[in-house]
Image 1: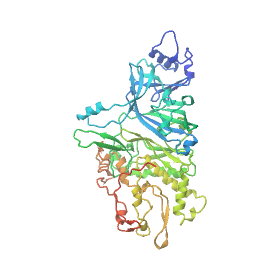
Image 2: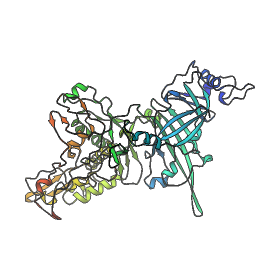
Image 3: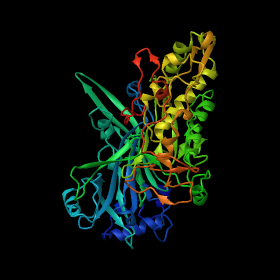
Image 4: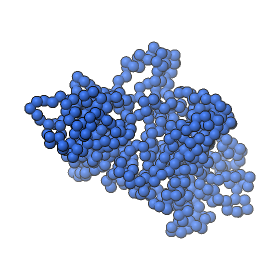
Length: 567
């Protein structure tokens, strides 16, 4: 990170910011930038991080490298602090409310640096005649323009003032009050930029924005603190993997044109992390391999201490599922330190956020590259009052047979076990997986008493809502304990299809899964071939469908794409 402060520029004889200095002889843009460089003690432009941030007299300037012109940046806007009124509505710290992709363009004739929004244009083979029509028919909109204050002598960087991008005057990159449904704009006199920092691959601005909401004769001032990050997307996108309706992944979609198609196609790519084996040869032999870059979650220090061990276990439970895809220690958990917090909202940290709110819920959103579905960063939002929901589930569903829950305060072991389940559930969403509501049909209720039926949970999947330990009466009236579902209740095929990098893994072949190939098609894992051509998972109800159920004859149903949200 590089920031030029007032003290470092004070050594310049002019005594004020060189870009704005009034001299008898008008200075060229190259001369003005040369003064900036000398004031910082640099003989040439040397960037530490993605760009340089220059601060002078309360204003912020961006020294943008021209080599990044045309490169795609992902803009991510996130709430950091909210007033009581929004908190009560479930709008809290950590909520990601707006994402978009932009590029920077240098309009030399107008001496401007323009920002253009990048929308997903349809796919088309470059060899098709229709490709020229797609190129001519679509244009991406301009959303902001910045006056170029200075240019480096070798034209390697340009300097622009960026105050209005983040102080609420312009809404091209951040339109917070419309996105949280207030329908108002920021008040310029009551809004300000708190700080702007540059990191290795992104720039993050933190702003305090205030709006005035009027209803009838009354009005209320609403102030929020937000962070806006511009993250450089990979120049070579990750290979996309087509959706299969047999497994419930979240997706990003694009239209697809071709000369010979008789019906317009919409291609859907699953959202997944980029996991690459550190030892590709060992991976192809079927050995467990550590990823080059593991998925690391950082636990918010505001998380109650008695819940932290269970939440950590719930997150790490997913390592067993990733082992089915050939990766060991793919998911890790670390503490979120004060030094990390001081850096601001850096997208390299996936944070488990514990919000002080009366909302009884949790969710697992993620930030994705819309071009391919690659998950770049994920955050777990845990509203404090979800503990009341967990307590209610445990008491209502197990109190009849479990004396331990018939007390005003439940033991930490029971609450912790429930918290572990919720953490596992929400992390699964941040890994790209949807709900699996049909799993509630896995075991007929009247089959629990059969001694030949061995089940561990009333639900067959960690992705079903309303899950908690159950205790029912088994054969001869003996209590039968059903514990919380975890990652083990997920079909292993799910991660083999979504995460495995190659087809033929385990037999020495190195055929990569091609773009557009149904992911997981005939993948071999650890020497065992599994095919996704058949969409008949071995749910237990296929064996029990002739057993009488209280709502009728239970018959097998194919799981469709699950269209529920990510909570």
